[in-house]
Length: 103
Image (cartoon, helix red, strand yellow):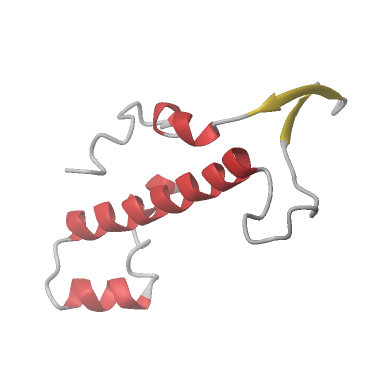
């Protein structure tokens, strides 16, 4: 969860962040840094899943993958889901669309 770093005790549970806090680092800056790293990880994962459809380092005849929509009963609809990375910020449950991540 990208926003989980703002929860009480989340930073302190990570030894490196706890040391930085003890050394006087700004808590809000550390939260923003952790959230940005979490966002970038999620973005890159979604990008790789939906943009390539295969391991770019694998031989050309290697199998690939795609995300496919399914019904509530888990039957495949055969409609592929693509470009999830493009929608990541718009899916921000806080409604901020990640605007505070890059300031």
